[in-house]
Picture (spheres, rainbow, N blue to C red):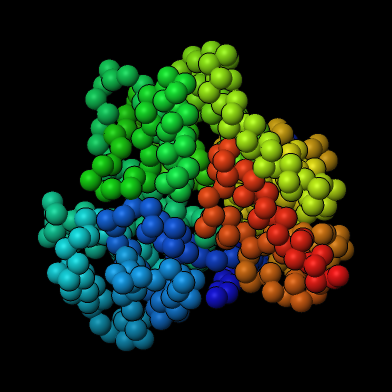
Length: 430
Ligand code: SF4
């Protein structure tokens, strides 16, 4: 299942944080953005993801999503073969034929994403033009958008960012002078969305709209009266696109753990002027349940030393949760990009002396990891197996995207994800 991509990353920007940050530009080991299709196709239930890529891309998706294939999968790969790569065939004609075949066979598709890959970028196939051309043929029945899932310059969660950003120009306009609306941005499990909706409604906030939506016919409206809360920390392009439409971000930590979830909900409550008493009344039972759930794992995690390799961009909020709520000791918190604005609340809650790193030079980082001998290492699949073979306990960061972890009722599951490898290792030792 492992598919590591090694590429040069652009030089990270200076001045991202006032804390000392190791900034590296070298070989990196991450999954590509195609991986996001695995959770996106489950979320937008009438969408289809057509990867325009190579057999390698098809194999990646098959092995990564193999366990989830069902009768009518909602993603596929249009293979660019060697002839296409040599520029000998008209790839656009071939793509049009593939799309026609697909839409004829699958009338249930309302939203089609053409997903770019390394090969489509290498041959400079312009998928935005293809999406525009095909949209004219199939509108209004099928909307056709495009984004890149290529691994050349991106990390695996940026596939979701690209997908959501591609939808923003298509969102209907919230009429001027409307009441302020609340938009939650970033993939969340349906069960988590429903919990959050109930909490917001009980506090007296407007019923939130979600991006991505479950049904492509219900695209959430956006405009200058939209206030949005990021549910995921890796949505830079989506945030920029929303701001271009006039929406304003509500600064907040991310809803991981009791503290993060409370801070995230409170930021929205403050925006609508909800008083502290109402906030406490609505959130008290959820907080108490989460506290009890965390208690079960504190003994296994407290005092354990953890090292984060940069992968999912969830590293900073996770480190904040694990150090402050579970008592873990942070050795190094690596993240592909350190977005100062979106992570401001999170960074302010990290211990003063934590070592942050941005970007990667994998050999150097492995040296630091070996020297530190952490109790637990969070990393991508490409690094996990060799590290396990060397005797280090690891956690695959991609699992954090497949498992509902946000909100009060998932806080225990989040802690359990980190406790599990330690418990397994302890049992093996016995
Ligand atoms: Fe590999 Fe690139 Fe295809 Fe991803 S998009 S599977 S990195 S070739």
